[in-house]
Image 1 (tube, rainbow, N blue to C red):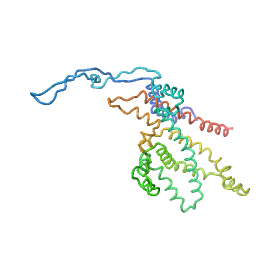
Image 2: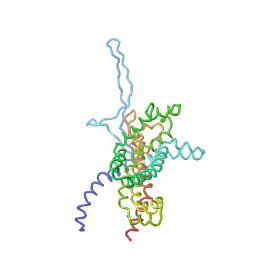
Image 3: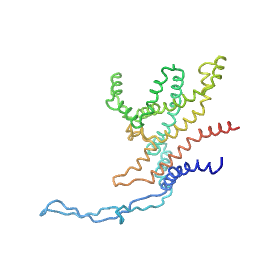
Image 4: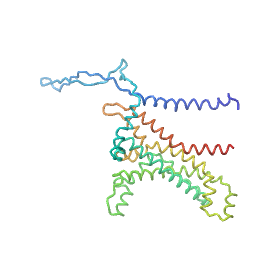
Length: 341
């Protein structure tokens, strides 16, 4: 293929990636080293009570933002280096907790609390998603043709539902007098509060994520099962291999590239977990790195947003995703080099 032809096909994609991915990412990186604040000034404000003869006026000093000639709030940007990262990580508190032996105090810091949940959520749901998706795919592949269509349709429903709506549905089933909560209370004879402690909230989040994402893994695995070499399977049956041995030595090695692909997608998506925090309203007990970035961007009572800390949190989140993807990408690269030779 000529270079001009190649550039004509690839050029628009590269341009769009630079415009909508690289440029915003570079902007966030720069903002993580800057601090932008409103320019403020102190003015005298006179406040008078209603009335004519009994009117009283009080003069007080208030701090208000300075407006430019167009009526917009003036801002001032200064370079602060790594201050935003230090503010997010709070390494001084971490070091103090380590020196005092109070390791639990580290998880009271917002970033490390969010990191703990994000890693747990990502790494614990990964094998469950792959395992459940593979079991559904094997069951559907071995089912009678007459029922495959309805089973596939029902299995895909959780994946079709919008993530926030799906998490809210699970939340309503278990919160307060939800249907499942009432049923468990009648069965156990005790009051049950699923959202009063963090560990039950996390269990429900794990359940929701597996329920929501396993259908995606099922579709990928089901498509991969259609390409399994039947001659190899028949030879294994003739040699006396059991179902588990055929699964372990024939099917799983054949599906390994798809397993790596699902793992990559799952790691990138789960590490940016946000919908579950909103849907389960777990901010008081459980937060994620993505939610922490959102919280920094939420205006405070004065209308200010911690953009520099939000940018630092976003960059740290991206670095975490890169570290998680190193092992699957190395496996993919080795498989690619092996197939090339």
